[in-house]
Image: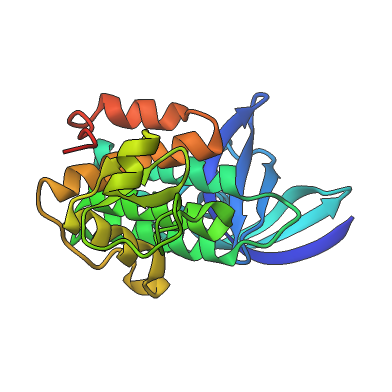
Length: 256
């Protein structure tokens, strides 16, 4: 077996057999890997607390045929205190599941790693609105993974959208002016605040993606559209999202 050293953030844990555990982790360069942690559920293993969900750690792994077995793990940074708040923990699980859906073992996606790491930090320090962190992550992580919406001009006629409102279609992933939106159908007018927030999430430096506030009704529309956009373009639901919804207030509805 070859020895591999890397840093990774734990996304998900699954118990295996009587004492083992599989850890799904996202490396710093954005590759999703599965790590077999033998005897992880026995006591007395000093390295095992670092090989957990919500922990960012230095790993020494034994690799064979694309499979990894844990040899050592040393904690670099822990987000484990998120488990003390069921709503924020559920949200962290959802963001981790989305990150897992956007990454593979074979392709680097460092932007997704940085976005997830920043989102966990924002949830942990509680200085940001959790719903806005969720939505900003959904918009930006999908954009970084090839699902960026096009807001540059009317996606129907190709002209600059003047005057407002700007309308948006989740399915088409593009904007339209009011006349084209009415003629084609399937578009909803965006509040000015919603549009600014989407542009911020898509274009800000990664470290500033979550650094904004938004009042109603723009907040509700921004959050609802982000969730719809993620589920539609990834063509799947998320069990962790259902869990999150079960422990928090009802999701806001999109539209005006």
